[in-house]
Structure formats: C-alpha cells, structure tokens
Image (cartoon, rainbow, N blue to C red; front, side, top):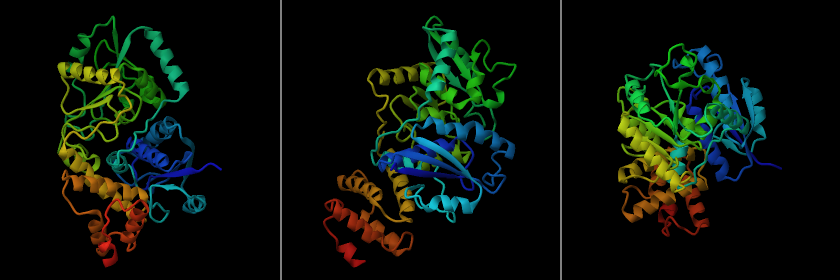
Length: 417
C-alpha cells in the first residue's frame, strides 16, 4: 500500500502567489525525509471568494493566478500524484480523518497552518539535507525544444525574464533596459540568441521591451513551457521576481540580480535575514551551485562575469551541489531561522527531525562557532514558559537516548523537570 503525504495549501492563510513554489519544495523535502511514495496536494479555499483576505490581488487576478500558476506548478513536481480542492470544511475533515501523514506539521481544519515562507527549506539547509528539484514535464520539454529548434539548431539561448508590474518596486525589481540592450548588442550572434519572457500582463504587447530582441509570449502564459525553455537555455537571467522561484529550484542555470530595498518588507534586509537566513553575498538556502544571486543591480560587465561563474560551476559538475554558508553571519542567521521554525513545529509535538536540528546546533555550540543556550536548556526554558508542550523536554531526552545520547550525556536537566 503506497504511503502518501497529504500536503495542504490553505488559501485562508497562504497567498495566491509564487510563494507556492517554496511550499512545494518544503513539502517535497518532507516527503523525502520520511521516504513517502507521493504527494497528494490539497488546496483549501479561503474566505474571500476562495482566497486569503488581503489586498495583494483582485479576486479576478487571484483566479487567473490560481489556474495559470498554482495548478500548473504541481506538474513540475514528479512526486505529486493528485490535486484536490476543498471549500467545505466537513468534507475536508472527512478527507483528513484517514490521513496518516499531513504537511504542514500540526495542520488541522480548526488550526490552519501556512508554510510558504522558506522556514522549512532553510531548516533543511541547516540540517544539510540534499536539495530537491522541480522538473518540466516531458510534453513541455518537447514543445520547448521544437520551438527553439525552429529558431536555431546550433545557437545557445540566453533567456531574460522581466518584471514590469509596479507593486513593491521603486526601481530595484524591474530591469534596466539600456543595460540589457547594451549586453545583448555585444553578444556574438553567431553563437548566442537572446530571448525575453515578459510579465504575463504584457506578454502580447505590441511594443517590445527591448527593440530587436525576440520575445516568447507563450512562456508568459504556460508555466510548464516556461520551465522547459528555462531548462533548455544556456543561461537564464532574472531580477527579483516571482517566476525566478521555479528556476531557483529547477534544473536551470540561473543568475538572479537582487538588491535590498528597506522601503518594502519583502525586499528588506530583515526579510532576507528572518526568512532565508541570508545576508549580502549569501545564496538562497538549498539551491545548487548553478544558481547565483548577485547582490547588485545589473551592468554589462557584471552580467558577463556572472554567466562565467555559472558556466564554471557547470563545467565542474556542481549543478546539484548546494551552496554552503558564506560566513559566520550567514550561518548564525540560518540557525535563528531553523530554531524558530523548529520551535514552531514542536508545538504539535517534538519528533526526531527536531532532534536533528538540535544535534546540528549543538555541534556548532561545541565547536565555538556559535554561542547560545544548549538544546536541553533551551527546551526546558520554553517548556516552563508554556511556549511548547509540557512533555517536550522528556521527548527530546528520549529521542536523544535512543540515538546514543549524542546531545548530552548529562540528563540532570531532564530529571530536574
């Protein structure tokens, strides 16, 4: 009997956005962690015409995004065997009653939980888990290959994805057309062929964003095709935008230009620190070496240099090797995210995957790389403050003892509880 993971994306507390990709990656990491056979994806309708009660998008835009991005995204995860949609809480409860493995941890109909902000991915990175990858379905690969061969059978395709909407952008997320025009003008067109994927809203615009550069409207409206053409490209180039998420966790060679902008929460230094464990120079957690975040606006020379960095990683066969921490600050920030996420998870009961976080954390404490409370001390304090269940210290001790008392030989704190 196959063991499936029920993965619930609850639109009462989760956005209709490309953040869904982070949820999919977190879910797949969870499935792999527990050696489950496949994922059953469950969408739960929210209170505002089926979506979360926010002002990010109109109901019409949410519906368009749901059917053009969220639903097709599930086809990028090979382990996703089925998709369900519930708007009736009683039917959802009946569906969950016989479910042994549910993600996010602690989810219930009465206690909906969101898990789309990279906490699970960052924690998996902290535990040194292997990365997982999205993959374009075979039919879309054939379509993309046919399209590219209709242009050329021997050129290398350089793909630029633009962001043209003005939300959360005062100039740091949109491309600088003059820079890209200059970069493209200096390409050897006997070797390379540039292509542009525009925002969906502008995919069939009568005016080109950069004169003389071919655009690919179909990729703007068909997500599996978008994934496929990025996989087949020599290099894919982005500013900070939603579609870059499928590349960061896909089999794609990707350069991602990013700048902090503290005027917007999701672009601020604090956001990257508290959700991704990142500081300037750091790479997205659990992304492979053929993905490069460049902490700067784009320039012609920087684009060229970044492409060389990616191709060097490819030549060394590092396309599935994850980035490491760049410095102590990156590690410290990541540790903070991992501990915060683990403590949140423990609210539904402490289990062995939490112990592995404390084991890694303890090793950094013992080596002097990090400073902080020892795991048993931390859990004892949080338990006494009623932040986590009263049996958490006991559970941590039992799991540690089962695994050879690797956290601490001293059980004094356990008995003191």
